[in-house]
Length: 303
Length: 326
Image 1 (tube, helix red, strand yellow):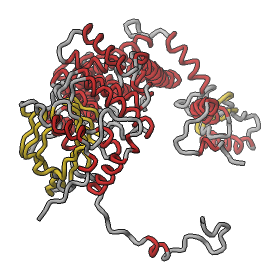
Image 2: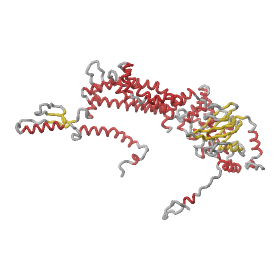
Image 3: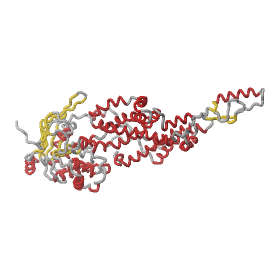
Image 4: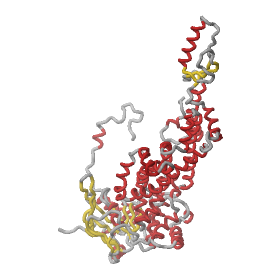
């Protein structure tokens, strides 16, 4: 039996595959081995994740996609230490994960800023918690706020900010703590498409300039391809690693990346992985069973 | 044409300011209007007659209140006797309400005179002193409740372990009626203020634990998880995240519980030596000064309403981020 070449290899130019090879030679930041997790519901055991093997390398940007219910959020929460591990192990720079800690920052989909604190105090929170004095924490927080262009809002409260601004604050709040891994659980899902694209560009800009490995959960394939070095594709029920796809796109991303043929081919390919073809319901036949438009309707059809 | 503006009959839509003011006014005006109708319209209720001229009925005196049917019977009697003795005079009277329903203007005057009337005996307190004593009892009882109830409630709301340890017993104890502990409280704490404070405490403390625990539990989990991933845990988590996050809702709970404390006050003040506003009310009822009784009850209501309004305003000042967040 001969293995067919991977459909995306045609798009891997030398420069891209060379870069991808070099990524895999970097030191490992995140090592997941033999990871499994089940939830118990009404006496029934429900396997969410099974036998996950995955490594992320230093300063890599990983996106995780998969059908809903594949446990991608659970995976991120387990790395963060917010869910217990049933079997297997997660290591961050060689240290096994045993609970939440400041070496793994997290940005949530719901805005999780502290509503009683100003933007500045939110960003200072992790710093003062980590033992920084108030003054150093404040000057450092202001630098981060400046970086994402929110200096005018340093003393504003979260309810005065737009959705995109809130997520920018959530990101720098996590980054100010200098974590080794930044976990992002569908952070831009609640934003409108235009703001989402702007935030993705923001994120890439920040990521390029600081020493951080990003583990980004999303259900938006465009987002995953636009952001990721490699995309971890999960199966559902139970969540298993289906494939790890290296994105065949050059960095930095261009304005027209979303229309690039390599981008579209990757999207097509991922789409088939994540949403396998389903049996189509014969809607036409069912519709004929019910009379939906009266015979003497003023507009008998829409064509 | 609709009977009401459409905004009044649309579910959960905020009213315009004019309607709001109108309805708030009406909410007080309607009960006062009903009360006035009963008090001032002679053919509504008025089951008694106030004698203005006793005539030739031996036991009628000017100013006494007589039931209508007895009054009518005496008149019928007299009319029958008049045939033999035309000299007899018929009594005169106006329809009146029983002494326990004073008219609004009488209560209004009493609101003022209650403060001005010196006590019957020199060692008895003035009205404002009674009131002050009541407020003191409430304040102490509520203070002790908060001192122990809030920390226990917050702990129970934070950790499942403390919740399971504290809440089942509290759940049981809160069904024991606080006044039932009256005799016990007097036996242990004496007859003065301590047992009264204890009743207020028992009445609010157990509810406070449960309500505080529930409110604390309602704090958005994402906020707690975010702080965990920022390296915050243990006592620091409670101090920096859970307490400030739950504080506006806890503050609202305390406002509601303070109202409950007032309902326990009357029972508490009957325990041991009667004191405070309850002493004033029972004393005035004994002298049949029901206008003073109503005045005292109204003052409790006013104090409750005014403190709540002040606390609500202060709450908006303290937690400007809270209501805007919704």
